[in-house]
Length: 213
Image 1 (cartoon, rainbow, N blue to C red):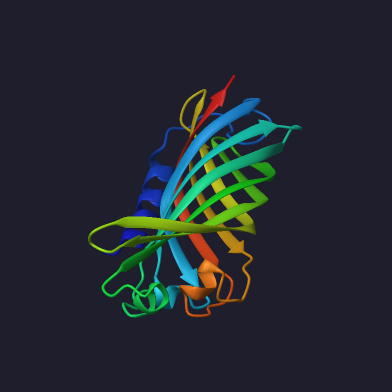
Image 2: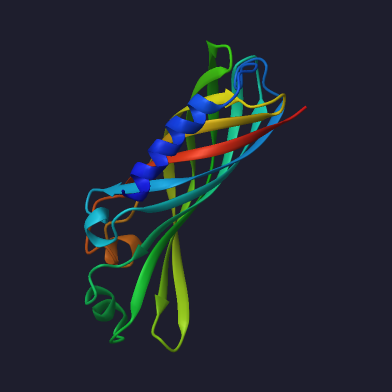
């Protein structure tokens, strides 16, 4: 079974098995909330051909603005793994046998709207805009080094949250990321994907949130 299949199975089991409690993301949520999500990421538009999917780790903080409206601040890291085209990085760097890997770090801010589904459950939708840092890490077997470019990026997500206790909630989340690029050889992403379109990523994750009451 693939890591993504295991992740989705875990989401279903944990959500169904969690104890009943109060609503999680609407008016009963704390004024401030902290959380973490971990999950898998699928890539599209040429990025999947060069690197495939990967993993995403996100730390997030939300501040209540109104009854069901929160400000969502996220800091995340997407790991896409090693370049599949073993000759491309050698040609660009002029270093035979070098191995490169792509990472994306992002910081985004946007609104989050929570809606009660009754009892322990709440659903939410979020949107964000921020800075995405595309980083290439190189390993020649003797030395390691990296370079990065910064781009404007956007995200949108939906999620299901269930209260575990007074302060703690479990959630399942799906998020789409889109990052702008410059289609020229000096752009790291464009160069090390051999001219792929701007990255489009789809992530599915499990998260744990604590209300700061």
